[in-house]
Length: 401
Ligand SMILES: Cc1cc2nc3c(=O)[nH]c(=O)nc-3n(C[C@H](O)[C@H](O)[C@H](O)COP(=O)(O)OP(=O)(O)OC[C@H]3O[C@@H](n4cnc5c(N)ncnc54)[C@H](O)[C@@H]3O)c2cc1C
Image (cartoon, rainbow, N blue to C red):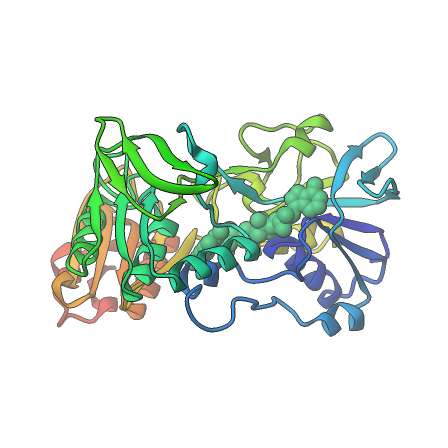
């Protein structure tokens, strides 16, 4: 209860673990180091609400940290961990000791592997979102490289603001890594019907421009897409270099167990920087708020020695135009799929199952179907596909007892 806890990274995971420690009665010093200048904030609105409203949505107001006696050190980069001495070094030259160190260093945007990549914007931080907002306000022609969730969310907002939008995707469908082919098809059509051009199977070889301003995107086949702005949304890589340099086990992410423990007994890791066990037992890197929150709870239980946290089915959400998407479970490889509702109306759920056992649900504007699907996955319930497909059959009646 009174150990000295240092948290590196003042993002969602880091700020959450600091707050939860106090909520659970931890009385020792808690220090939160973040190299951004802003108080910890919500990242999801950056790709969904950058054109309207307030971007600065703090996770907690400044008073919260004062009242909870959490020391927040913003604009300070932790440069090294010295595990044998149990201390870290910061770029201000300071050394700080710890009993428990929590690494919550997140991820950074993957650079676009193309000539002239420095002409593209990326989207991870508040500062990035402010630049994107300016670009939308100037009503430019926008090319988005990468048809992942962030790329499609930005495309939807940009189209709603009358920009000319082209999405360039290297794979043969959007969301190839993270969604079913069925959902990819439905979403691509939804975007195309609203005026977005989507090019799949298209690699980018270069960005052309001068004096810091982009003029065109050049595709592998030589096609030039004239534009005034480019957003690169080609994924993120874990910021695990600090952990790797300290000798912690890493493999494209810090390897942790289901208690947020790393290979060093005094160091925990949580959030986007980790490669973590899933409810199925396999290891994966999840980039989502629910996962960061679950791991923050795991870290608190480990530090305080309280009951372990029950494994959650992974889930996340995305907003595109008027579609509120919620996805749970692991989608590929694709087993059977039951469609409930009508994709043409924008209200539907795709239940993916393996011999009647639900492995994933992808729901649009269907919160009840999402919740039921998540429960089916967690319990391993067997469902009757015909009953599930019939919107007139109550969801609970689709379970085979
Ligand atoms: C635009 C966008 C939209 C998203 N939308 C959704 C969504 O709709 N739903 C969803 O579930 N998830 C969404 N996500 C993902 C979600 O935001 C992340 O999973 C979550 O923020 C991860 O939290 P984290 O604390 O692990 O990492 P981060 O939030 O990245 O925080 C890490 C922090 O650590 C700092 N840091 C790193 N190294 C050091 C160091 N050495 N010293 C000091 N500080 C350091 C970084 O600067 C950063 O501030 C979105 C992400 C983005 C970028």
